Image (cartoon, rainbow, N blue to C red; front, side, top):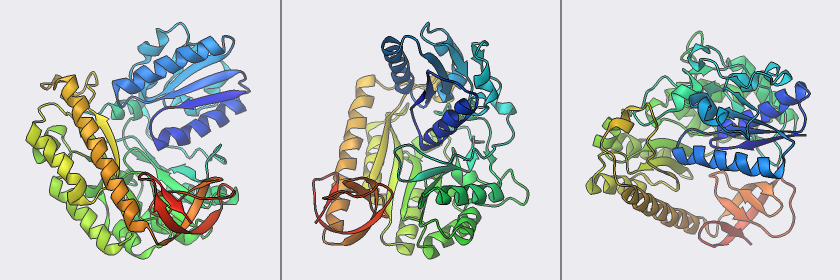
Length: 409
């Protein structure tokens, strides 16, 4: 039996399924693979804690560590006596890596990887929707971010391969597909002809009619191309929920982060999309307590939630990552960072409750994730009565809310 423990983003969740498949092809048995995240020091700490726990519970299992943290700091895991092998992000997707685990650390230069091959993951345990990786890596160098050193430079899966995998996934019963990547809006810049994310979206929806719902995992709104905006306006099967890599609502902090957008850019994008799709909802990544952030700068981030109309917040307390420029900037007190993160999360709870209030009394089509839980097109969770088959669609009347979830009649 192969168990994969996943930390971090949707791309990692997708790749965990590929890891399970590749390790299975190699005949690996009685193994636990940890697919780690390097975004924060806390993510690394949690993975180490989980590794120790599994070793206590499964003393005879092979423990393999891979993912972004294994790529960026392999010595952290190779130094743990509980770990049998450490694999880099490229090595984890190669079945040959699992045939012979005699070489304890196999982590090569991720910057030398020039292509992202489709993994053809045919199933996703316990999930009603399927992830489809179309891009990997990032060419930008935001001052806080370690991920390019874990993922390498931006590279894209050719459109034909993406369409082929979308057909495979719908053939396996998945009616909803989520496109994933590290920097999705950079899709195609490395491919012949320079196709864009918008062109890819329209091609999938045109050539794979069995895709009933297509979602985008996360975007850099400043890079949204004209075809993508037209798809938002014209393609009903492109779901009206977009998660933005906003990071801050203050222009000076954005500049020090080396982001490519301004506060106004985020607000304008949300206003434009809301005019195209009035039923849209927005999520955003926001960092609390970035170095040099003053009270006034933080208030700008707090106010961005209302000014842009954000609903789902992923709040990250700033975490200094060794080797990044931000780690050398004047740092804030940890208690201040924690307090600001708590205020942002509380603001997000209020925004989510307000969105839920708006949807009361409406009829919504749900994709069921569990027997009693489904998601609307704009990604709001809804509790339902009775049993429903995960993966099925169900029309319901929204009768109430408990603040974080809607409740169907």
